[in-house]
Image (cartoon, rainbow, N blue to C red; front, side, top):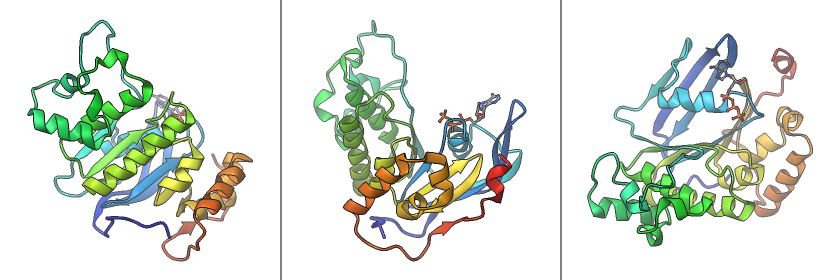
Length: 260
Ligand SMILES: Nc1ncnc2c1ncn2[C@@H]1O[C@H](COP(=O)(O)OP(=O)(O)OP(=O)(O)O)[C@@H](O)[C@H]1O
């Protein structure tokens, strides 16, 4: 099994039988999943499969019409968006950006930047940062309030492959250091295979879930991701030569795929 470093069985979020309709479109259909303390859970799925909608349900921005989203008492969530538009004419340094909208103690700003691997760019203008540096500052901002759960919606959009890999390595380090659980959406299958404890494969409904290797070998996942799956699986096997037994669940019934 991938090591659930810092993970325990303390449940942070339970999504149970959630269905969401957006503008007449059934975005989520009877979706259940959970996140435990300290684990990294990644949601994969094709475009329009409801990944962002599921994140928004967990955050509380979308209310399910059916089903429930239960959260641990006083759960603190830090959200890292895909990107953020910032007026390039604003003379705003990365450190100052973390002190918006209200002033923060400089130690808290410095700690968050360090945890996000961005301590050396505190005094640099936001408009001059590279894509990877910019995402680290967004990560630092999400860490300011010491969240129990970090939620990231395709945070490496626009980064090249090494930049994405570096960013996800940083996420694993944040998890190790802070013990925060991570729920993220990613299109980068190789990253999903190496950096997640559990993967949820979504296509309106949950096609398949479990450890990365179990999901990668599931027919539902292969049907959705085609040949890309094989490369990801090969890489995963190469890097993680071990077996999976417990705790994984894959629905091998194809019948529900046809209904969506
Ligand atoms: N306000 C809306 N009205 C109608 N349909 C919507 C609305 N918002 C989202 N949808 C639809 O709901 C579905 C799920 O959207 P969602 O953004 O959750 O998918 P996603 O898996 O995150 O997609 P992507 O990978 O492209 O970001 C999509 O088909 C989308 O077009």
